[in-house]
Image (cartoon, rainbow, N blue to C red; front, side, top):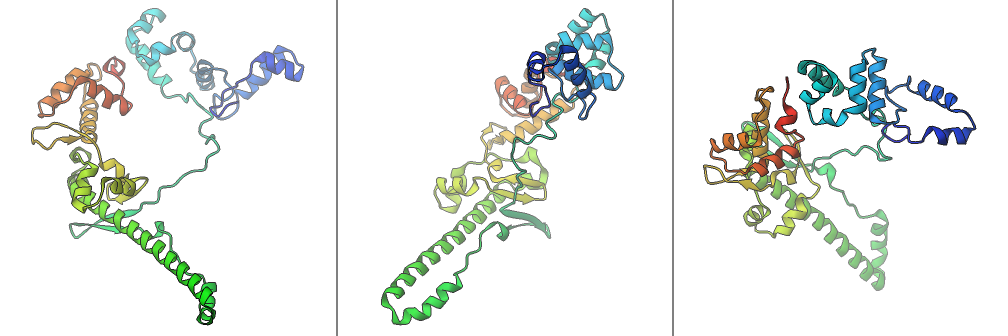
Length: 326
């Protein structure tokens, strides 16, 4: 079986491997289908879903036909077409589709991790609101601590009478000092960049995602009088823990779209607005991308239909035709 729990060999291959007949193979596979997680051992998606419904005792002939012949239509939310083909009402097909979407299409994935261990995020800086003021602090536990080995301390005593040893130790101590200073400078740069980001995005931390502003590397670089590449390296793979959650520092840098105030809005802010619009829609008459463009336009946010579609798809939200319910 693969990581998703699907059987990846054919009956013929199993028969040849174990020198048994097809009936024996089918009996064993049927036994596997009774195991947990429900749906494991299926040979395709339709069979996987059928096993789960049959186990719950709710697999009907209509549902079985839909699973085996019309899964793509289910994905496309073609309720009217399915209803006409199967001979059911639209609301009955809607209920079947809702039921199918509650099933697990990949029963084995809860146990599979691709051989990789869980990776945890350790924030590099922490943001706290104390007495109404935001305070940024470095997470010292994420920075390596360096010490000079006691062995070199012993050698330093001998170096007083050994010129060559003294030169060697001075060179090593200078290298160690440079490394320690570089780490401290890196730590300070990350702190400064994070502080500048908080300053620019204070409305986000106060009011939420809709208020995140456009921000570029150049803006932070100019404020701190450093090069853009330094800012880029400082935020790469770095995280900030805030009252609103843990965010990668890159999250706060995004392009924007024109708005009425002349400053522009971050793409993340616009995405949040699009999501709110879709969440509030009438499911029987969902908003099209063109409708969303017009609604944003009423808020003086200029955006194209294509951009709305790109943002919507990026958030995993289906088109209006696939969101429609009966």
